[in-house]
Image (cartoon, rainbow over all chains, first blue to last red; front, side, top):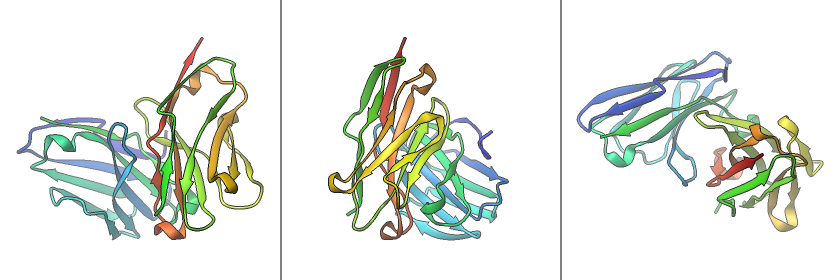
Length: 114
Length: 114
């Protein structure tokens, strides 16, 4: 049990579908993150939320839409994705938005866009 | 600009042999340095971190890493590798100079043979 739970573990979707990824943590952390992990590339930070407020959007296409209703839950809404969006999407959390604490990662959602 | 280089894409070692994974970084000040491990189908788990002080840091699972400022390196070591150590290993740098974001390397994949 990593403390950060992501669902679903696997997702296959067509380019015209709409789906959502869910991330949940009960560690009492106040910062949450979405990362994209593609083969043989560094992890790409997508979004950061600190105390439910979005603080970072690293030039992510608008077909990815994050939502953070409270400090324990984070969603990534997906629509009209492209095949190159296929990747492992990782959620992470930390006590504050500071690398000093290190991050706790979930196991990820393996997304395949067909 | 901040960056992390892991020169070895893939390493194979025999069980019981020693291990060293290389990490070089570029950072404008004293960096915060981290090593994470990712087992198949899992998220990233923090192995160890360095902020300041003793340049040899101990982590979980018998791993250690040494910070060498003159070489801009933070290599991960383990005296005797176990089959369960087979995984992907990521070095990361972060801190105030990176907007409190991590910069990850591309990872080193470790295979352990009996």
